[in-house]
Length: 438
Image (tube, rainbow, N blue to C red; front, side):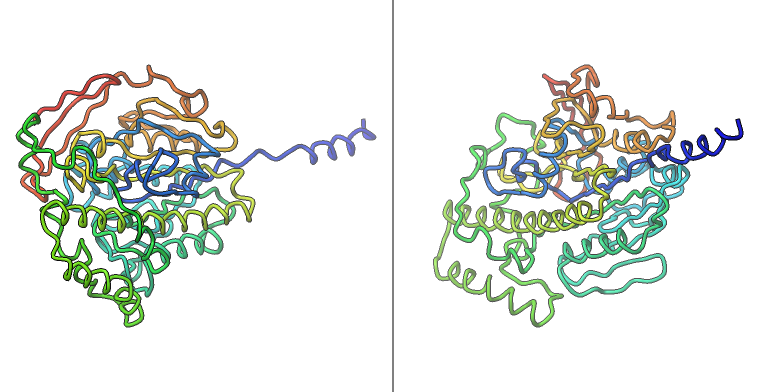
């Protein structure tokens, strides 16, 4: 037996160590329409890096938000609860950071956590070992960045800056002995869609066809549709249309901005456009600027994906791409969100998990942003609290489309009176029907 003991010890030492829990990277944007992602069939633009996540993972065709507006959607993702329970029914009031959130539960499960980018919940982030967040909405250029100790203005284009910060935390700031959860969240492509210097001239020669419903008179729709203030032809202002430049640019940034927009704006003034021709001009400028903002996001996502590959982290990191809600690209004449109609109700949702998810799969399951928190906890092997209203998506990530996963989905929008004058409404959607009450 004594002779066998050294051999047994050697064999025991050769046994593989248990695999650590997966890292979780949530890449998040603001107001990204699925129709502006080529993996979702965009006819406008190509997004090779978001497409890369889809090609190596699973793309969900029916991810629905519980309330299509920024802060409430973010609160739902953090808590796994509808807004009447987490308290964030509208934009504006500070999020109650004392309540249970999935980042806090991941910390308890042994994760190191970070929040970098657009927080947009007014209160200080809680549940994070590290945070660097925009103040409020944050500008597209030279943003004030809030940390646990101070607020500092950082010069540059915000999409690039947030990526620099995320990469720095991944490379130097995190506790390498623990699995990580990083919420890497962009401002773009939120209104007013200011392009970065690398993409400010993209799409300049591309003409965009207006949607068939652009001149919708809402005669066959709810009266609420006709009351909304969000038409591209009537309600975009001079800042939205880049007739006036941003106020906070450096001299070099302003020079680049005017080099691009100055001659185009002069051409508009000399053209004397009016009526339908002016509407088409507004639509083209809106689309070009929106898509330019998206292209900068896609470039920077590529930087992060490359880093994961180069450092060997990709194999054990779950990468999720999503947005706080969908967005209108001229359907019914609109920009913005808020409605329970499909363009704003649906949000992109793509998951890459090499260990568990087949590559290049499209999933038709009706899922929701209320499912994100329980899914992240389940991925980490942590218990899902009984009071979370969402469900873990691991069964559909591993098994594919399951049309019985959710029979129906409930939606509620509260912010009225408020911006854009979209009436309060609630409704239920199934895979075939939708009922909305205003």
